[in-house]
Image (cartoon, rainbow, N blue to C red; front, side):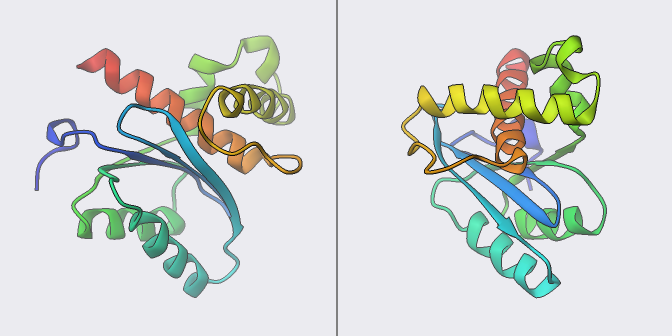
Length: 155
């Protein structure tokens, strides 16, 4: 198995972990393709959706915000598929993408994340939302943007 930085990048799935999980898929050029949110209230549902999401054609990397038992399921499946796996906290990407005044509280940070994510969606080939996007999707999108920027700086 190659190390994360040795794998050629062909696509990214960014994940905001939680019982309500947000995912955002980016293509080989770093453009947002699609995003989803799903309630993963049972471990069986979690495993099914992780398997389905990581089977997306072209994925080489998985970036997961969060930890614990939920992250273990993602990591195990990504490793099985030989996809590079990176785990980090919300504070990592928020410090780079959201101004300090807009992240004084978790609620403020989530609202700003939603505003920024809507801009990303508007500039991408991803479909426009049909309603309000949740903070889980917004944070998955921004975590993906952060990962792509961070990765490109290290190349």
